[in-house]
Image (cartoon, rainbow, N blue to C red):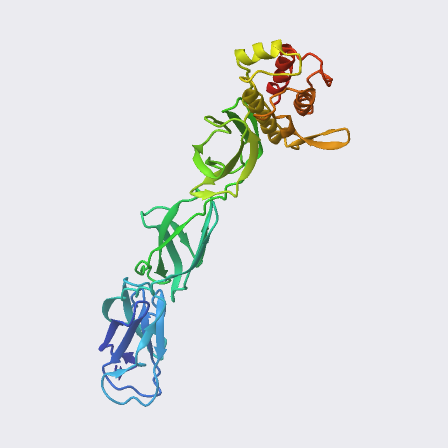
Length: 405
């Protein structure tokens, strides 16, 4: 730039170039020396300067004042002039201008354009921790430098979340369900996305099954017990165990056990299940009903003929079986194996006959009657020696025995 009669010779050059994804640089060369007393400034703007105008160009972006001491041709006005805070991957076009000491503005060459670099992708974030409940999953991941947004999703491309945070909790999820997630980061400038993180697979937990309540059972016969219970609050079904042996799974709140043996205890254990888990279980023990007793026709006829002092050879074994049945019922009803007579404990087996003593004495009959009557009244009193024992009496104590539940 040369001064000629107070005018400015605007034979000059200027350059615009890319510095980074957010910055451009500029430099203006004036084509002649200038006097240090003739102060000049130069810069760039959105709009072009009007030659010789006292008004500055529109939208001045950056400008520098000339410094003294420049004495050669094509001197820079002020080295590299930075243009900050531009958008990445964007073309920008500016004009250059100079201002003489007299305050007038002059354009330098024409418009020049430059494009900022693409914004570098931020570092890939990685999951740092996770946790779950029956209906939620919480995820945390590392901070990605330069990122202001994170994209979290299921690897199927669903459950998309965009958040400035490095954590997120999904809620209202079904229990016992597996999910695989990944996350990526977006640069604060330029919007470049990082690559996806390593995947993380996590499942919502399954609810713990609870125990049933009000478990009970009733013997229906000598071979069947019907059990029932109130449903658990958390369950998919129930594992059933009879005397610790697995017998099946059901969604019902009842179970009818069949094919059982008479007069024996059976313990049903019910364990609630959910998603493969099993509750601690609840148990109840119930006895099946006892077998009834039936005298043979021959025995009944024989007894009808007796007076209480003798019994025929064909019936003494059956009488002993009858005493065994009484003892079985006593055990079934948690009774002792003796009766108290005259202040003494008399074993019930004393009512049995032997091969050498097959007499149905009054004492033997009375022990049997008392042993049954303590469980279910017979309506009979003790018999005295020599009193006739009729077949109907045997039917009476038999009915009492069979009526025990």
